[in-house]
Length: 241
Image (cartoon, helix red, strand yellow):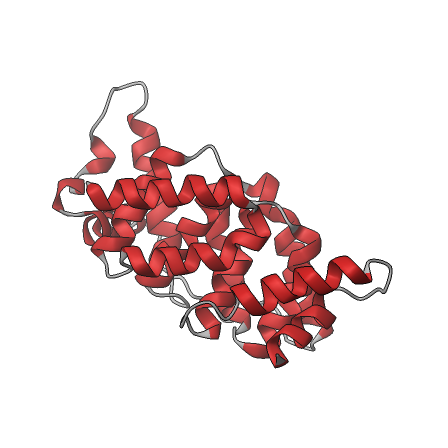
């Protein structure tokens, strides 16, 4: 009950939709929030990543305050948004970058935060490919140099940028990074092939089917039933494969 009342007050500041607020809060912040044994850090991380994916910036502003108060560090918040850029593009993550900075400044947190990069321009490509191998398997070795001549540069970018610039950073571990990628993809929709692949990657590094369904369940109130059911189908397809 404490979580429900806290989130209801954090997210809904007016009394203009009292009936809706009451039944939505009973569902999202009590029935759903307490439906499984995920820890608060994982729940808030999944919810914030999902709000990036579905472009829920208004709700994100409210949930970010709650996440900072209850579960996540400023570095974890920043890393979620940084990594979202690889999957959503800067056109969709800029409002989240700006919101993070504004709210952190309101809390008198000095910016920029301590750097988390572990690579250099010279090491990012091979370091990123090693992450691909660690997460997806040995078949990814040399991924950046394989493919048709006209598009092999995209594979190189995937290794050097998506994985070399982002996944190698401190602040979040592989398990958390794959979990939030799962949330980015399921929330934006239209990415089912990539979602299946990242469901498989999650499972390979220990985020099993049951865990992914628990995460998806936390995301449901923020994305609705169609995308939830699409993501569930992808989880089941990945488990079969």
